[in-house]
Length: 168
Length: 226
Image 1 (cartoon, each protein chain N blue to C red):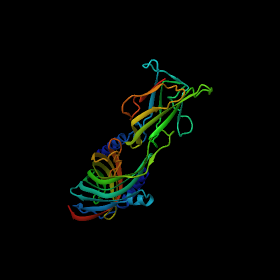
Image 2 (image 1 turned 120 degrees about the vertical axis):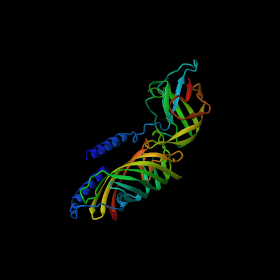
Image 3 (image 1 turned 90 degrees about the vertical axis):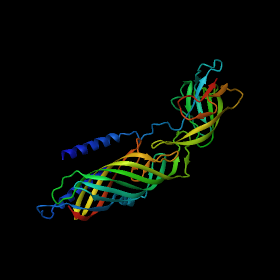
Image 4 (image 1 turned 45 degrees about the vertical axis):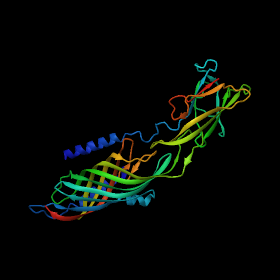
């Protein structure tokens, strides 16, 4: 009987150890955000911070906010639509302060091809963006001088590094 | 699940008390050998309350020596599972083959078992991804794809480590319960999806293991005494 108790004991111990799995919470990367870094147009090697940046996405109410969009930011991570193959971002310089006169809104359009990829049991499916084309809308007074994709063709598959550089 | 296991354990223990009044022993008692056949009770009862699962399992064992039995389980299952962002259905059948060792030393005339066993198992099945919603930033509208994707001709093989009880509650009638720890050996996976549920194996977790159990009622067909 003692031998049996040992077997049962080990069975329970081994089973409970094997059951400690991070299987219920999604910890892997899901649908990647677009990562933009802001550079100085006059000195293209240097980052240049954007004051009071406001981010809006066409067709969606409200301002997009997350921890990367701060009072003074040199890089942001923003979501791309998964319901359409085009997303139009409205990036407003000084858009988050009280003064409306100094606001300057520029529009950046992304076109892409979507593919859904299975991740894991808790995460389900994510969307990846292939062959992404960036297009800056010209207006009378652009604060963005030019936009540069960091790869050609640009595929947005993860958030490990920046995808787009904006010079201003 | 544990709740059921414990309550059944009590039934089995109390049932075994009743079954202890047996024939008076002779000087040279011979054990009965035979084939025991039965069915799993859990899935038929579960299907009654939940439309998302339908299944039936048959069990059988054949005694080969004082403490060893050749054992098998086979059955089919249809199961739909709901995860946070998607749901999928699995449909297929399975067979398990192996040995049971009786770790319990019976009093003369009793044939109860504490089962320690091992199985090789195989399942052939198909999966349908019924619908999924993209896991993305909730600031933007999420896309749900409802056109179902069907994955045919999948299979899996695995090893089960079995721990269980079998108690004779009436003459030749046994109630059993077993808990199984499963480890996948290999499986044919669908493209851009995963075999998250395998018939007979139950849910497949990250490191390809899982657990399953059954509650059985079985009948011993005695063949000879030894």
